[in-house]
Image 1 (tube, rainbow, N blue to C red):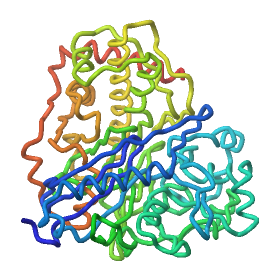
Image 2: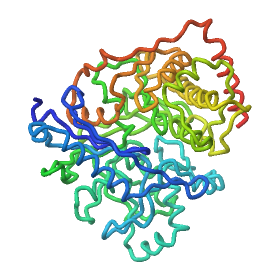
Image 3: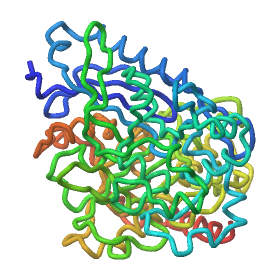
Image 4: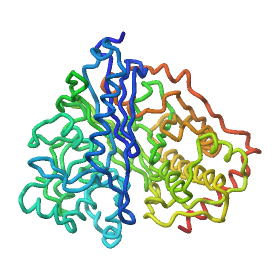
Length: 487
């Protein structure tokens, strides 16, 4: 049995589900549980979730997880991490944490029109590392202050708090006093209200969006005393808070040079850890991100990042449109069987890096079967990932080695055809480990650092196909690029 200091509970709250896992020191999963959550879109561009449903989903996961562990394993769990959707937040009463709004999802772009009307809003502002768009919290918080009556009333009463989702969940799960609101610096940075790598709200950014500083929680490091979570009949110390994607670079130990990390879930996110912590111009090409991954009292961790905002959510859109759903195996067969595929205009949400186009009307370039449409959706995700990979490689001036492989995680990694298409189109090896939940494992390893994760030895490796076989795919990629320029 692992020692108490080596066993970690990680709660990972994502857009489609909440998950809880117990990890050993080497990344072995001792037990796991999962509960689905729903996302609602009451208007075009609006994406919301029920905070009570999310809280209950986590509590149900913890109950199921506790019951699946042996007595010795239960006793070995003495610390916990909570990670989740980085740019999602909820407006609540400061005194009671009673929600005033639904969870405003990171996918939500309700403030995009206002941003389009104010193209100069970022002039003479400090560098946040992130190109401003409607996914980040600043514009949506501004929108709520202007348009939501419950939010406006709470502000007049000095009883308003905009709480990033992981901070809010930490608070309600631990039962801390409402007056002690806290959020880690990496999650705080996804509001677009902090300067790059800083651990405080930036007054100039707050002023530009007319957001009072007393409506936001205090900022702390990634590792702190966030309270205690009930785990069966035990109380577990919550020691880490952060964003789900933020911990990808820590998921596989230190032996991962020349690597691009891709996590393909609701959205798809790419990261390359940065060697130095300097300005974004040093590391990141235009349109890409420089993200704060995590910070301690001693060190700050930054990564060059790209994003494809609609990945699994694009497939969900297709299933809803057609009223039926294909399995992963059926998608694999479709990718193998069809060489003539339509272009999928992947505009389910705003496009993501490096172009940052607003949301539009999704659709296909010509009529096709459901199998062809599903394959086209997968290809659109691969094509957008490849465009981001090319941009990350272009900005890779501070690395001594050129990226040689992709370590792939997330739900879409279960689809072999997706993995092979990504290898073929990027011309990089794709390494898929048996455990695809890299964000949770990365959080566990950040709390308990390791030099090597033995699971990499058992990775499925997808190598690029011979060039002659890739001509049809390259032709479709060229057509996709051309269409993208016209979007």
